[in-house]
Length: 20
Image (cartoon, one colour):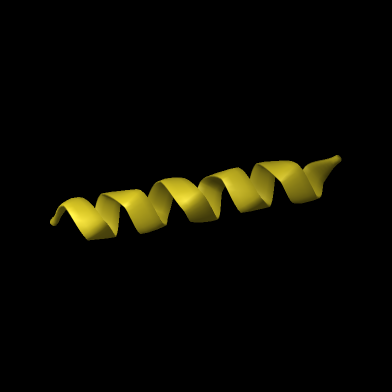
């Protein structure tokens, strides 16, 4: 179930990059 955490982290990073 660690893949979900990795995907969530990737999504958060992508959202942060989009905000910048």
